[in-house]
Image 1 (cartoon, rainbow, N blue to C red):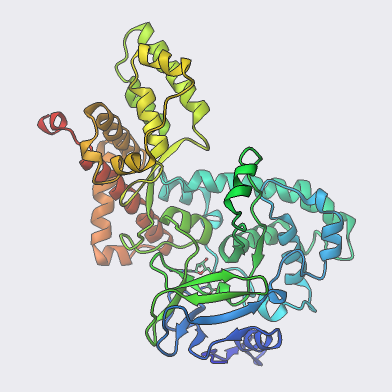
Image 2 (tube, rainbow, N blue to C red):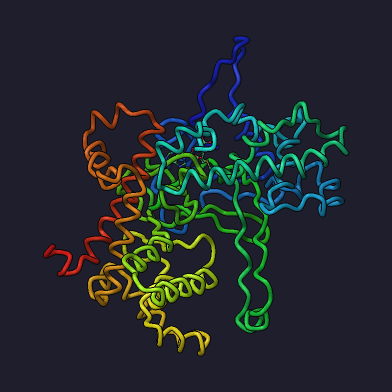
Length: 468
Ligand SMILES: C[S@@+](CC[C@H](N)C(=O)[O-])C[C@H]1O[C@@H](n2cnc3c(N)ncnc32)[C@H](O)[C@@H]1O
């Protein structure tokens, strides 16, 4: 196998090379690596990565991993005990069996996966916002959605460790112990799973089965697993390789020609910068992430719709409309905008329609238990960047003002959410380079979101607003 592994000195003066050990292990377990690629720490965007040593064409397989080399609850040495007591390991995340697997295999000197897991002697390179101080998160990432997501994660990790993991490991002192398998290690492994694990997509059902299952509950997603070698690849939104799952093995396939010397990039999914920072601890440079998004909370649309409402009747109507929307909207109730327009157009359509209804229209709507849905294609076009300027004035005003409220939530209200200072910092190369890596990443998240919101405000500016 080709390798650019460097020999590393260890403290006692002896030499070790974790990458060489890992590549030898790959050979032993039957992982086949094309001689057109190599794993390297040089010439990559972040630590380990994969480089093309020759030109590679679309469709070529870069490596094949036998399923037996994957690390998860069925392949670990402790699978019997995990499976036997699986019901006591259930949790909302569904990650506990893999985390117990990793707690065990990462600390076991005779683990079959030792050459793989030894690539990361500690997890210091992981710099997810969950490892930043709360002050740093709340200060640098205000308005981006990351602080709330991290607070939820940390509370869940603590709860899962205390309520599920600790009672389980206490029953198996021969395999785990609380002195070694601490909450700190557990939290690091959660970050490792967030940034390195893969989830096999659900098998596609044929249309007949789908119809039958329509009323059944949504399928539980497959649990995460560790996929050695595939997780050496870094991510960009404009990726050139993709992991394919087949019954016997997993294959990394080139999806766009790669020239000799270029880095091979996988995709971790369509991820906005705030999601990349939250889940993986990095961001793509400002403007280069084609999947960047910004959320406009439904509560902001509601707030704009009810501004200036005077009469009791109108107030009551607005309150009823809000209640109906709360029942209809899933999750936390945010409308997501990407670089090309609204990504949750059906939800936005619903919100605008309900909030702009007269008393009569609203009661008719309730009597009919909804309305006939418009064509999906028409809605998606209407809320794209091309369609937004042509929306009716009342809808544009709501979107415009709600976007403005959202921009303000990033910071200083007088300065419209710090838009100007952030933009200036981004454009001043020397000043940007003087920032810490955390400050740079936070700035990239903020600038990406705000530029989407400002574009949205431009597209929904009505003539009346322009005259003011
Ligand atoms: C699946 S691992 C990829 C291998 C990793 N570079 C390593 O050395 O172990 C994911 C991690 O790689 C880093 N990473 C991936 N893509 C990146 C990118 N485009 N820019 C910066 N860091 C990236 C992040 O730290 C992320 O959490």
